[in-house]
Amino acid sequence: MTMTTKELLERLGDPVAAMNHLARIDFRFFLRKAFPWISGGASLEWNWHLDAITHQLNRVESGDALRLLVTLPPRNLKSITISVAWVAWMLGRDPTRNFVCVSYSGELAGKLARDCLSIMQSHWYRAVFPGTIISAKRSATHDFETTAGGGRMATSITGTLTGRGGDIIIIDDPIKPDEAQSDTTRDNVNEWYRVRRQII
Image: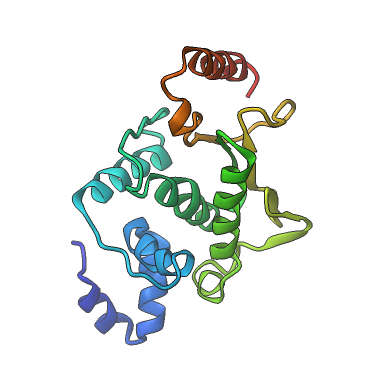
């Protein structure tokens, strides 16, 4: 039987412990908590499409889905949900996992990486996932590692990837919006994917 938040609070008796427990086991709860941290304090206005995305991400985590394609218009929280918050949550649950996150530019890849690292270095994240610690040996924003050997590497379509692999590879906006109508750009990205699919 699934407990409500109120029932969990009453059972645990400690509201902070209950909230941390919920953030640890429920990605939807974690996303709501993480969003203000990287959005200047703005609260997340939940919508049904976030339920759909989080459901499918749970299938990826469990191994029921090996590939997932999420297509939504811009400004619908795809990147924040998947490339930022979900990666942080997954590394909290299993700090041995390795993620490769690819975007169309180094600037965008870096922004998403900074947001993910910001969440993971927050006081509340460390309380939720005390076993996930960023390693001092590799703590660059674009390529950081946990002390358990997992981590997140950010790169772009034109960036370096050879020799690096990941348990989960996220390709987030591989084409700039204003170049999406270019046959040449689309062909280049498709070729990049075809080649990389064989080596990562």
